[in-house]
Amino acid sequence: MNLKVRKVASGFAGEVIGADLSREEDFAPVYQAFLDYGVVAVRGGPLAPAAQIAFAKRFGPLMGRRPSTPDKVLMPGYPEIILLSNRREKGQKIGISDAGRYWHSDLCFEEKPNLCTVVHAVEIPPVGGDTLFADLEMAYTALPEALKLRIEGKRAAHTFKKHYLEVMAEGSDRPPLTPEQIENLAETYHPIARTHPETGRKTLFINPGHTTHVEGLDGEESAELLKTLYEYCLRPAHIYRHVWSVGDTVVWDNRRVMHNAEPYDMGLYTRHMHRCSIHGDAPF
Image (cartoon, rainbow, N blue to C red; front, top):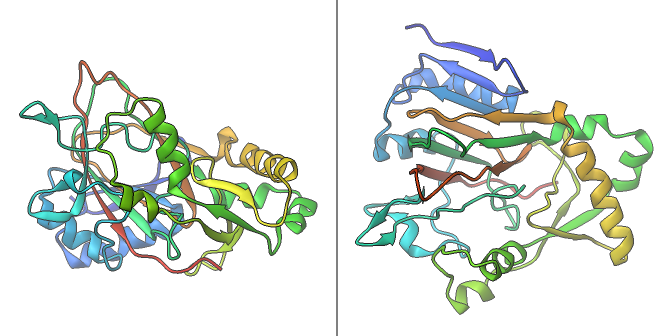
C-alpha cells in the first residue's frame, strides 16, 4: 500500500494510511503531517514497545519518568513508556486508568514542556474513551486584535499540583505520588501566546487543567481573561474528536494543541494504551 496523507473528514487533524513506522523513509511525510495538522493519526497494526520507542525518538529525545509520574505505571523493561490502562494484574491496576480526563497540554508545567506525545492503542472499549483535541493555533488566529494585544507579553502559571490534588480529593485510584514527588511539582510561567519554534506561527499556550493564573493580574481579572480565552479554544470549529481503533498510533504537538480523554465504563471494558513523551524547548 502506498503511503497517503489526508485531512480527516471532521476536524483539523491529519491521517496517515500505509506508513510503516519502522521505516526511516516513512518518517518524513509523517513528520510533515504532524507540523501541518498538529495531530496526526497513523492507522496501522500492532506496534511493539521497542518499535514505538524507536519511532518516538525520531521526534527528539524521550523524557522518561517525570516527578508527576508514579513509578509503577511505567512499562516493565521499557521505562520510556507510560501505561494508560485499567488492566489489572494480581488484583492491582498496572497503569493510570483515569489519565487525561480534562483539558490539558502534556507537561506544560515544566521549564521545557513536552514537544509531542506518541500514543499507541493496544486495546480499546467499544463505547467511550475517545480523545478530544483543541487547536490552539486556530484559537489564537480567531482572537480579536484587541485581545491579542491584551495578552501580548503576558505569562501564565502552570502546575500539575492543581489537577493532582483535585483528582485525588475526588477519590481517584491512580497510584499516589510520594510526598517528595508532590513537593517537586513546581509552578512554572510561560507566555500565554507562544511562537511555534518550527512553523513560526503563534498559538495560545494555556489550558484549564494546569494553568492557574495570569502573572500580574488580580484573581478576578485573571480568571475573566482565562475564561474568555478558553471560549475561543473550545469553539466546535477548533475541536477534533479521535475515535480510537486498535493499532492506531496518534502523535500530537503539545506546542499547539490541548486534549481531553473522555471516560468509558471501566467496569465493563478495558482501555490499554502505550504513551511516550518527547522533550521540547522553553516556550517563547
